[in-house]
Length: 51
Image (cartoon, rainbow, N blue to C red; front, side):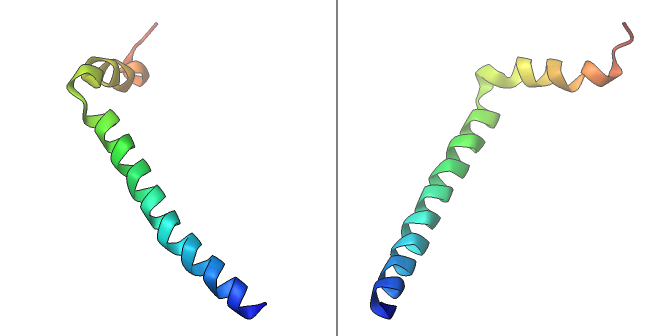
């Protein structure tokens, strides 16, 4: 049983790290994509608006 746990833990650590790195890259690309700039700038001004 200990060998199974060790194998699974190694698998989860390796592929989990890869998964989170890919997801971080995707979120970063979305946040910095030039097409999304206007929407983020508009959202940043919402608290400053007086309606």
